[in-house]
Image 1 (spheres, chains in turn yellow, orange):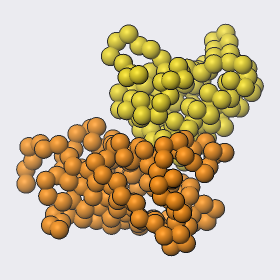
Image 2 (tube, helix red, strand yellow):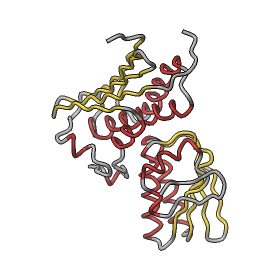
Image 3 (cartoon, one colour):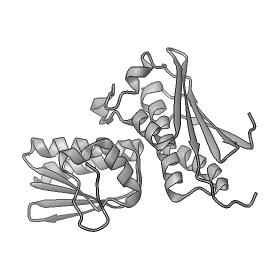
Image 4 (tube, helix red, strand yellow):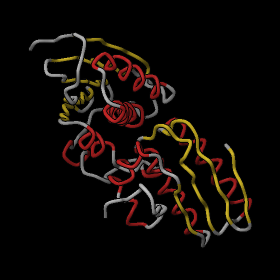
Length: 109
Length: 147
């Protein structure tokens, strides 16, 4: 998984399919990096994700809690069109972690 | 019932098979020329049902998961996912959004809610100690098809 650290901002570029099987490794990698680098902002970039079931929601909620514990925040960015239905259904929008994009990406409240 | 085509796959309840299961169902359904979004809906719903079998039905053991896919008239797909695991005591409770018995595993408690919103109909039959069968039904949009 490609990761970048820019100041206090850690970005993880997720790829492939996120399900119950693959979420475990992503979770371990993400939490390991957060503990090691102490970012104040964790960005999960979904541009390279082509499938996600509700395990992805569990993954996001878990990282949201981890970042709260460390006094930081989480942002979910570049969600592909096919995943938006799942993001909307999950109620994640109410946590304010989904990136607002001026073009094409409107989430219903 | 007039079954136009059908297939059955059986596999072990290992998490590494979750991807195989949803891809196999999607491959079979592809003969109906579904839209990208219909394929995504089916894969997601199957993934939720299969994950429930892996995480809940068999918990710390392994058992068989069977998927029976049927293509019915009017572009309708019926997908039956069965296990012989522990069964569900209170189906109503299990289907409540955000209810989960595995919060430590970071399960969001959205499995059934996703199945219901990504399919037209979801039915669950379960017997404690015997197993669970989830049936997903989805009617695909009418498209030009070479029958």
